[in-house]
Image (cartoon, rainbow over all chains, first blue to last red; front, side, top):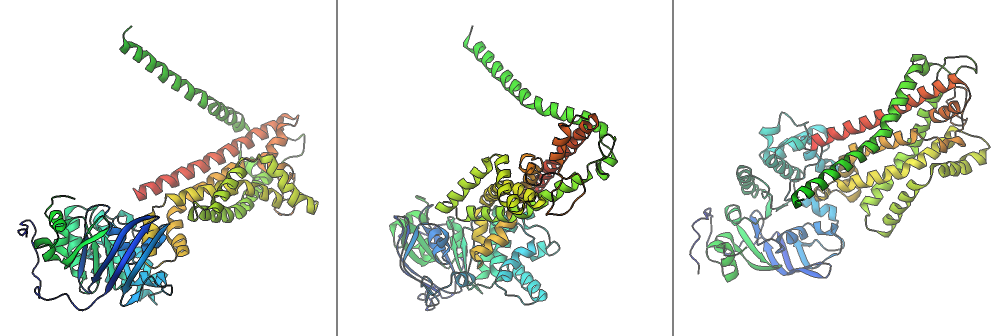
Length: 273
Length: 281
């Protein structure tokens, strides 16, 4: 077994010795994903627990982002892709023909690698999801939800005096928090984050990480990252992907200090990747 | 001669050739502007914009009916071409890669290459002959048909420039595909599309051939869409081939106004584009 990695500091977690939580939010069973004829994900089976942060790590091209995008069917828009297996969210198969993708995406929000604010005002960006889903009855309710979401995303104090200004005038880190606020505004159950801090400087990254950590009180958060320290800092569970396979999935502290697989150990100790 | 010296000489020759080519390209523009301004300015005054043509033999008068006519013609053209062109452009960008979209794009490019006189004949056939009447409507139709492919291709290209991440952002918030197009992608491309529309308007405002047997001409003031109507281009043409010196002067003044209009449109388009780029920067 490898010795603990000195550069990684782990947060204390209650009930560390306990078995995995009984609650399951997302239950993935034997998921296979194809780009054309190419198999991109091989038989992924894992359970994601509610109100925890689950991180997907692995080298570039290992399939972690592709897997994340199967959880809100974002891959549907990519031509010539195919999914096999089951993804259950709250015991409901999201690939069943009866499922409305629009409804699914309201429940499973997403934040992208590169911040993608719409070319509208700060207010309109956050209000967008509320407006198209008719979630706010009155102007007051709309404004309230926008404020609440911006506060949750720790952006309110920086933008409260300029809500009508273009979102494109914000800094990169602010834009990404705006995108998080926008996703939170429609109150999803699950928040998927695809390398949300990869394009940001260290200070902006730290703010996003603190935010992720605080969001798990209300949401089930799944975060893709290529930064292992980040996974160690923010997540409760970590899944290590390699060449389209799920190599190991366990509590984050065990993945980083006592992994079962040699491959995982080599990766988290920086021997490749 | 050393290799190095030879290299320098060849380089200098190419630089010289490039400069010469630029000069040849710019000379016609400079000469057109020079002649139009120097000739047109003499007869250009306020009355030229506000008064009707004088009867033959009298000097003075203006082109009021032609200004109003051209404005009406390009408005009618815009009314037809903006919806058809923008919606075709949305189709081509949303269904890019499908057979039908490729066919639509090919059709648009072909239509764009059709000589304007042929488009005039087409409009004559469907909007003049059946009613036995030249009309502003027929002229607007001919100009509109010319604008459609320009607007469609501009819209398509600008929609394709909107980053895919923006579409994904909208879809991830529970937007349907149509919703994403109309609330996020189209607004993001809108300044560019407006620029394209303005340039297309400037382009057709200078057309004469499609109007010759559609809108025809009208020496009186008319705002009826069902009557023949005057236009600046046809008026300039009529005056230019007439034997009267005074009408030649009027033609020059009309040409100057037309060039000024096209120049103003290009300027507006550039300013809008620059402002948008600064906003995105």
